[in-house]
Amino acid sequence: MQRIANPSTSVRLRVAPPTASLAFPSPPTRCHLMTDPLLHSDLTNWIAGTVKDSTPLQEFWLQRPGALTAGLRTLGHLRLRVSREYAAVLPQDEAALIQAPIGHPIWVREIVMDIQQIDSVVARSITPLTASETTWRNMRFLQTRPLADMLYHDADITRSPFFTTRLQPSQPLRQAVNYALPDFIQQTDPLLARCSIFWRQQQPLLVEECFLPEFWDVLATTA
Image (cartoon, rainbow, N blue to C red; front, top):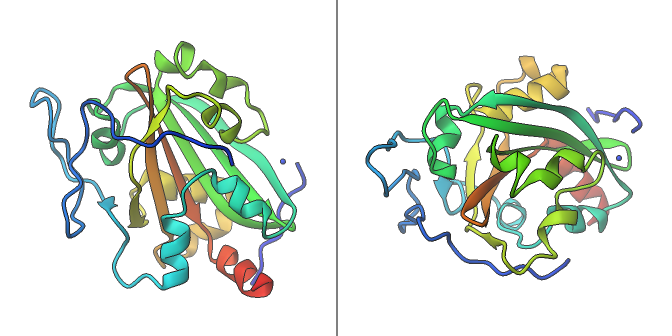
């Protein structure tokens, strides 16, 4: 069943791991912090590489470089609406990714993107709270503009490789989906998602993107 959205709304990027980087073993394995032992090395549900049993089409979108919004616009009219923006504390699932301790203060931005009025992607972006007031302060003023507007015009920004997952109920991104689209609360099928970490002035910005089932339906109609 297609879910109709509520009305509301590439550029080159230097890609490189941060100085203090996560390990990216091969074959893909669960990512964990490999640097400061004073932080933690708890496992997350994200893996380096692409999740098992992905189709070639799913793998393409899970690993597609550049701004996701640019790719989505090739499929039809794209609109973005903000679900919520708020201060919170860093959960375990995301702590290793941005190399900060669990419970660290963070700023969160959650959005929904629809294609042709069909909700297709839910995204969650987080950064340390202090970074949201300094290095990444522009994320607080984007409103319905995409993060790409501030990420792909700065040569000092680097980007990690992608991590992927089939979202579990406990993961913050899945909870963001449930908050923005309550119809998903009763659905138990894991949703495919990806994330990567942008670094500027040694400050991380984690961007997580969940592809809703309707996204794959949109792809089928535009093929």
